[in-house]
Amino acid sequence: MFGRIRRESPFACAQAWVIPGIMASLWFALSQTGAVPQYLLPHPLEVIRAGHSYLLGSPGETPYAGRFYSDLCSSLMRVFLGFTFALAVGIPAGIMSGRIPAVNRLLSNTVNGIRAVPGICWLPLAMVWFGIGMKTTVFLVALAAFFPIYLNTAAGARQVNPLHYRAGAMMGVTRIRGIFAILLPASMPQIITGLRLGLGIAWAYLVLGELTGVPDGLGAVIMDARMLGRIDMIVVGIVLIAGIGRVSDLLLYHAMRLLFRSARRTA
Amino acid sequence: MKRHLKVIAPSPFAGREKILEIRGLGKRFESNGRLLKVLDQVDFTVGEGEFICILGRSGCGKTTLLNILAGFIPPTAGEVLLRGRPVSGPGPDRCVVFQEDALFPWLTVEENIAFGMRGPKQAVKDEVEHFLSLVGLTEFRSYLPREISGGMKQRVALARVLILRPALLLMDEPFAALDAQARQGMQNLLLSLWAKFAHTILFVTHDVGEAVKMADRILLMDGDTGSIREEIPVHLARPREKDSVGFLRLLRHLMERL
Image 1: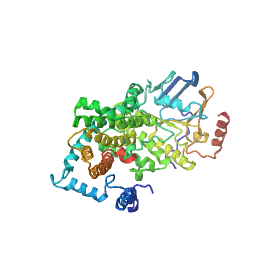
Image 2: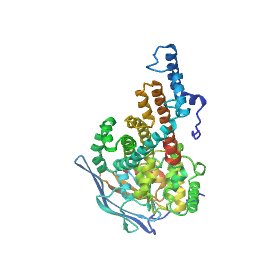
Image 3: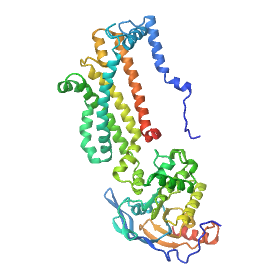
Image 4: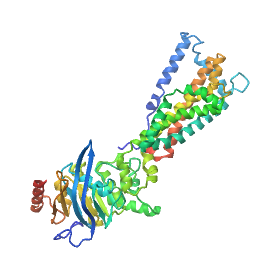
C-alpha cells in the first residue's frame, strides 16, 4: 500500500542490460562480417583475450599481462585522494554559499570563472607545478570534482524549506545543531547528486592526468597502448574504466544510504 | 459525558492568571517603495489556559500576528510580553502548528515527535510513546510523513509541539487544508487535549463555525485597519451543539461582522 518494500522483478533488472547487450551484439556482428576492419575496431574475442591476459595473466608473459591490479590500485588511490579533497572543500563551501548571500557573492565570479576553463588547460600548469605523476593527477581530479559537488550542495542548501527552519527554531534548535539536524538532511538529495557527478568526472580527469606519461594507472595503459598500436588494449582500458566507474558510483550511492538515514529516505 | 465538558463561566477571563500581553503592536512592510500597514494598534491580553480564536478574512494579517508572537519576525511597533517578559526570537515556550506540512520528511512519525526533546533516552522514549497514543498514531510510528494522510501529518505536528509543554500554543489555520471530516476529527482531538493539558491556545482561522466551536473568546480582526475590531466572549456550554440556538445566533452575528 505504501510501497515500503520495493523489489524489482527479474525482468526489470534485465532491462538495465538491454543497451549494453545490444551494443555488444552489434560490435560482434560488425566484426564477424568484416564490415569494420580490425585496425579500427578489434574483434570482441581479441579484446576479451587481451583483457583476460591483462587481468589474470602472469607478469612478463606479454607486455600488459597481470598489470591490472597495480594499475587499478594506483588509479583508485588518485581518484580517492582527489575526490576526498573535492568533497572536503566542496560541501562546506557549498553549504556556506547556499545559506549566506555574502559568501555566494564572494565566490560566484571566481568559481564560475574557473569552472569555465577546460580541465585540459590546467594540465601544462599542473605539470609545471607538481611534476608528472601522482600530485598532478590528484590536483586535476580534485579540481574537476569540486565544481559539481560545490554547485549542487549550494543549490540544495538554498532550497531548504524555510518552514523547516522556523519549525526547528521554535523547537529550540540552535544554529549549529540546525546545520546537522535540518540543513544537511534537507539538502541530502542534491548533495548526493553532486557527489555522484563529481565522482564521474573524477574518473575522466584521472585518465587525463595519467596520459602525461606516468608509468602506472588505467589511463597510462591506454596511452601506452596507443603508442604501441595495441587497439585491443585501448578498448580493454575503456571497458574497464566504464565498469569501474559504474561500480564506484553504485558504491558511493549505497554508502551514503548506509551512513545517512536522510539519504535512505529522501534520495 | 465528554471529559472536556466545562462549566459556563461568566467571563472566560475571570480568575485567570495573565500569560500574554500585547500592547500597541504594529507591523509595516515596505515593498516596491510602497508602505504596507498590516497590523496597527493591536492590543489584547490572554489568560492562562484560555482558548482564543483570531478570526478574520484571508489577508487581514492573522498570520503576520502569529509570526510576531512566535518570534519569527519582529514587530515595527509595540511589544509582546509573555509572563511579563518581552518576546524576542522563537523558542520552545511558544510553539506553532503551521498551516502547511512542516514535518521533516527524512524523519519518521516518532522521530518527528521526538525532534525537540532533550534528556535521557528512556525518558524521551516514554514521552514519545505517550504522545503517539494521545494523537492515535502508535501504529504509524515508523511511517514517513509522505506515507501518511494530511490529517495524520497535522496530528504529528500537534504532538511534536505538545510534547515540549509550551506555555503558548500558536496554531495557524492548522486544519484549513483538511477535508470536512478530518477537520472535525482534529477539532475534537484538539479540544480533548486542551481539556486534558489546559494549554493556552491562540488559534487563527477564517472559518466562523470553527471559531464558535472552539473558542473561549473570539478576536475579530479587521483587514482594512489591521487591528482587532471586536472581542466576543463565547459563553456556550461545551461540547457545543452546532445546531443549538446560541451557536447559530453567534454564528450569524459573526458572519455579519466579518
